[in-house]
Image (cartoon, rainbow, N blue to C red; front, top):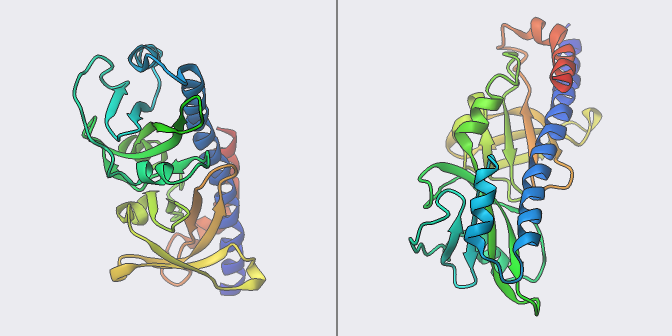
Length: 255
């Protein structure tokens, strides 16, 4: 019985991870599309205040900011008319784009925005001048509280807490028992080839969290999704998980 339930939870965790992979991929793609459209409308020499004023008026969900080649804030949709000068040259995303000619999407670890004061995850791409030289960074900031609110019930109360990780293994966002790991780096390794290479064990430093689960890469994004499997020995809801997760994941995908 235990073996069959373990196999079932592995299958259902994978099904839930697949749904979340598609969802996070869509969120990332939508934000990246906003970045690309605004960048195309503004390069190479834009009136960025006007561009971001129009974006803010359209009700865009993310806060978009423009950072100059010197690392100084040029404009932000949070306050398009502000003359406040903020030095953001110490941000990881600025350094990442400054030192490479590659046009790639970067997703930051959680941090407190100096523009809005909110806890955010930032999606960024570089700006270039007419000669292709580095001209700054365009930043779209996603409020982590909004993410947590939107996804808080996504595990259907079945124990399937999940986290969104960057390429570096650091947690960008999380829910449930993994919700307080934002910024922490997880150690991840495959545990059972019979269950597939995406079935892994994970652990955070300091004994804050450990378990097994399924990890998947969000298509077209530098993000990965880790869904924690419920503990067969300790979880009193296991029978409900075994009966309900696949159907629940299907309903989530249709919602």
